Amino acid sequence: MESDKFKGRGSHIHPENRFLKRREVTQFSEGLDVPKYEDKPITKYFSESVKNPLSKNDSPDLPLTFSINPYQGCEHGCIYCYARNSHTYWGFDAGLGFETNIVVKHNIAEKLKETFERKGYQPSPIMLSGNTDCYQPAEKKFQLTRKILQICLDNKHPVSLITKNSLIERDMDILIELAKLRLVHVYFSINHLDPALKQVLEPRTATAEKKIKLIEKFTLNHIPVGIMIAPIIPGINNNDILEILRLASRAGALCAGYTVVRLNGQLEEIFTEWLEREFPDRKHKVLHQIKSLHGGSLKDNEWGRRIKGDGPIAEVIKRIFDQGVKKYMAERKMPDYDLSLFNPRKQLRLF
Image 1 (cartoon, one colour):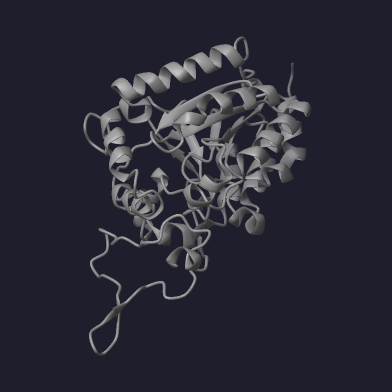
Image 2 (image 1 turned 60 degrees about the vertical axis):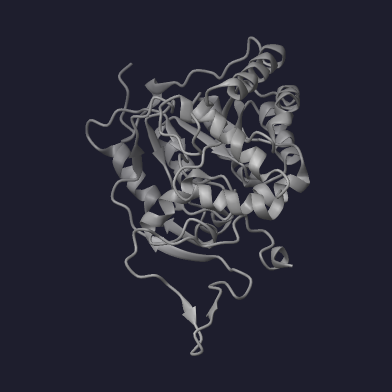
């Protein structure tokens, strides 16, 4: 069975990269094409230097203006990941290529330190990461996220983290110190409670059970934690919303947010192939419901609607989510950041 060969991978295909003029093929002299990934796909790392470590966005759908991404591509293999499309800019494909070719920005921590020390720089909370997961498996090897957190602590700079990986537990020592200064928010992305679904939907992430336990542990150590139920995929994981909120609240989560799935760019091809492989009986129903969230299209670039959806199914999702938050997280909120502590050059304070 093909899934045995690609065990631990979300996508089993490698769609063409529209930015490349040449198409990579493997061909016998007899003219018979063979698959690009004949053997079990392995992860490869590519080192990259950056000049500007921060990415700026002007999207009204995102709460923070700046983000930092130590890695491009992600071995987690989440089939719905919007970051897949951006991997084509690096010369790879958005399918298996996204999961097996990881770009490592080896100098990003040093460049962040230089940015903080730049004259006139004004502190603003940074999202770590805004694109791929900063605690994906590559982090265990390269430790760029830990270096970034240490620089934030050294300079008293606020930072917000979101992850699906339990590796974040390794950095509790730094997170505890940041939390004491009101300089950190941590979010866990939890969109289902079924370990079997995890194996095919987001294969190399931590289980929901493990993330709930970490929320409890972080809360006991006074690290403020929230959750993101993202993305909600009708017909796949929408039945878990209330229970996720209940379990996260019981563990100590202070807030929650959600998004709905959208299939922009090559995600349509990748996600459709995944449905055909894993849930063929639900394929047409799921795709139809996703379209209903986005004005009749699988793709959506309209502010607001692209994140929360629109129409009857979106209203049901919103109502369930709002009721859950009201029931389980009323009167809770994340602490405000303290921007007054920022001190990049260790200047002596007069007052």
